[in-house]
Length: 106
Image 1: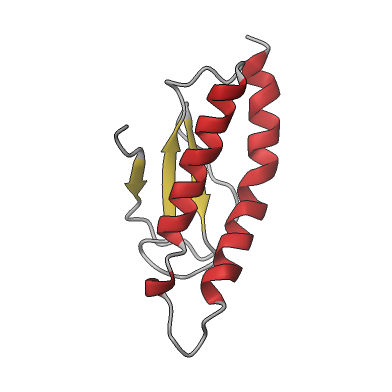
Image 2: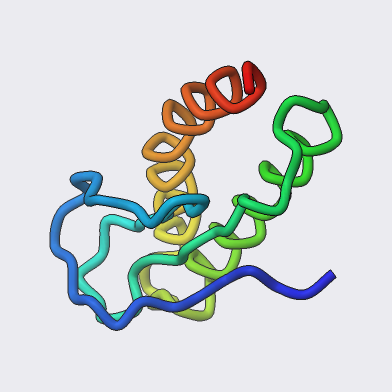
């Protein structure tokens, strides 16, 4: 499966949800970096099925793993990667929960 992660060049300082392209979730970390978000495409998935929803969660997990890779953080703050991942999951989980039933009803 090819990766569906696209690095954004935008510099974002907040975790506010911005407009997302159709069929894409934007996963953000609470870090002030030019590379602080990932886009996860889901337009090719059948979210009405458990397999489609699992595939989307897997893609989101891969995006968060990339975004919050411990190598991107200082060794002086070893828990920053965990905090980053927790914040990213907290940001995207409500949108995943809202998205799945809406698309499943199609």
